[in-house]
Amino acid sequence: MRCAYDLAGLSITSSCPECGLAIKATLLSVVDPKAEVLAPLVRPLLVAWSLVLWSLGGVLLVLAGWGARVHDLAGGAGGAGGVTPARHALDAVAIAGLAAILLGSPALIRPVRRVPRREVLFGAAGLVLIVLSAFVVVYLHVRIDHHLSPYLEPVPLLRTAFHALAMLLAAAGLLGVRPMLRRLAERSWVLRHGRVQRQPLLALAAALGVAAIGDGLAMLGDQMTGTLSGWLHVGHMVLVALGSVLFTVGAVNLLRDALRLRPVLASRPVGLEGVMDDGQAPGSVAS
Image 1 (tube, one colour):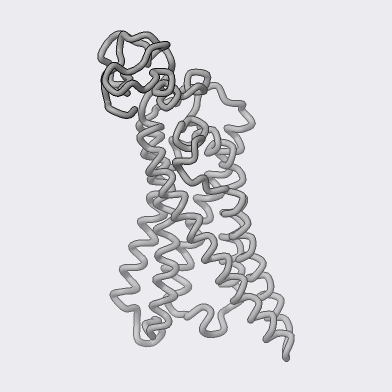
Image 2: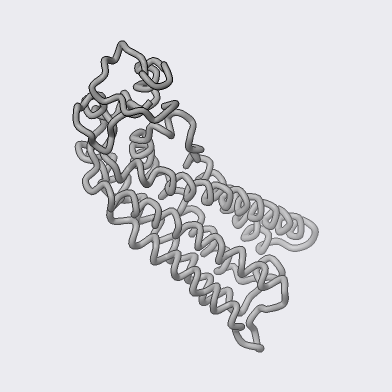
């Protein structure tokens, strides 16, 4: 752990001949006490990269959404002038996000062996809901929003309802996949020791719920007139903006954690037997 000296073959009660550090201290820094009692992954490499791809898809959809709003503020909305090349590029980003979620989802349905059937069903249902949410978001992005500037001008009730539906589907989906993702996170020694920032999926679902409540205020405001209607639409913009910012931060953190967990998930868990092996295995311990 300190000097990288190969400790293979030395007694656990002795110290490193090079730096004098107790071998027990090195073992404690390397061995994952929980690793060998965790259920093995079905396909470690596929699961690791699928988690990264799935998380990346969410970030791409978020970036496409923010890009569209910036595009609208810059006066690039479609309308009679047609759709700009920049808007088409954002469409491609959104479609790429949907594709990433579709490609990453199958391997996450049952990534771990010997898990309760109920957890598998909840995870599969959650992934399906998230895919449906992504389809709705892409439909909004490439069809409805081409000729609108949401949050800058009045929009049809159907657009607000679709946006609320996407938020609720994604929130429910995150709750469904939460047990499965937590099981994957438990495999990581670095996560349990604070080396990876755990992003609570409950917080992500709550952020989506805040945005959906904002959409509900907008739909209620559309049925009213006068000052109350105006205040409801102001509340809509505030809540949607707040939920969007919180979800963006959470989605980026989730992708970052997936990237850090990838080598842990793809590799065989380190156990005490592997550490004490006499051979020069890749998992041999160095002080």
